Image (cartoon, rainbow, N blue to C red; front, side):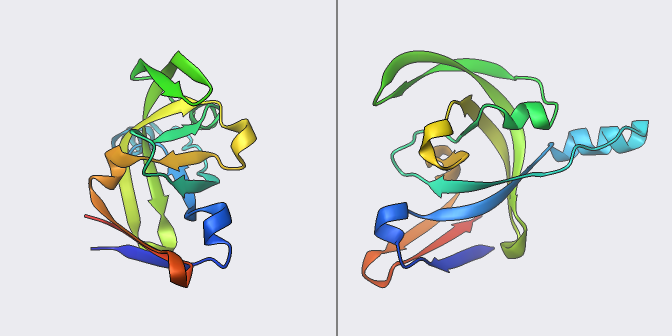
Length: 144
């Protein structure tokens, strides 16, 4: 099972932050190659692992950069809004240095004020393990 362990001196202040790469799904990449289409470059962002988020959320411009179409929509609730309609996208997320890859649905939301471009929520966490060692300013994240 691929995993990453990260020590962050400001873990309490910043939270568990990782660099992730967003790419088009593998099936779409295969189709683009067969058709000779240009594959969009990965979008590299900072993501926070957030056990308070029920689903994975991404900055709303990421799907545009990857030229993806929505696969649906749903209403989200945040501390500042209720029933905010957002589009969902099927995307591949990778942490290449640690061989972690996940393909799944991400909800595009406005995260401009957060200082991050992705929240890794409980839907993805249900496929892995998160160990938060606060006194050591360290966390470990694994995916099955």
